[in-house]
Length: 211
Image (tube, rainbow, N blue to C red; front, side, top):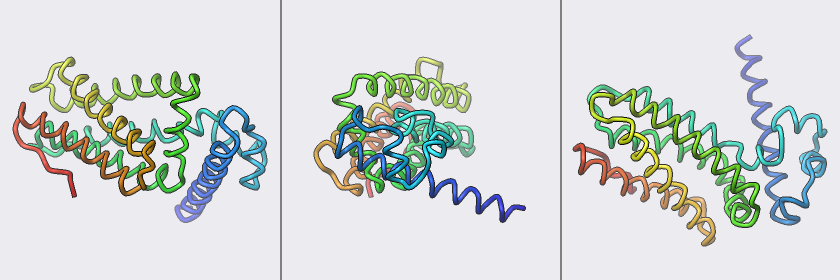
């Protein structure tokens, strides 16, 4: 049973990857608004019904991994090891989120396509902002729970906002400048390092992520 579930999950992930790769190519070639769900499904050699089993809409596809990364960040903060500084906890959460980008959006080309589209499609800007605000709130609550004796809610929301804002800004700048996946990851890690250093000045301790 476990093996069968594992096969199903791998098949699901392969199908999602095929849809994302097909969409990234079509969005870049035809434009976001001009590309239909039916065209994406056909390019991935799948039915439209299969597309909707994996993604509710084109917007959800384009922003697909945003919630996944927030979940990873929240989980990392919940699993903070005893004695870890705030800076170390934020660094670990960020590293898990960046690793997800490295494994998914960056190699598929979706991150680069999204960076270009966000600048020109107002509906996507709104959708991304909504997800960012909701995600920031979730992570801030997790950070506050982990460090209730050290941080109040304002501290937590400010630190998480600085972290997510730095990661997103660095990634977008690198992507729009034509950065390779390795350069984008390095830019995100550098941004995290700057935030962690500022946090460490406040609370003491914290790793250097530039490597």
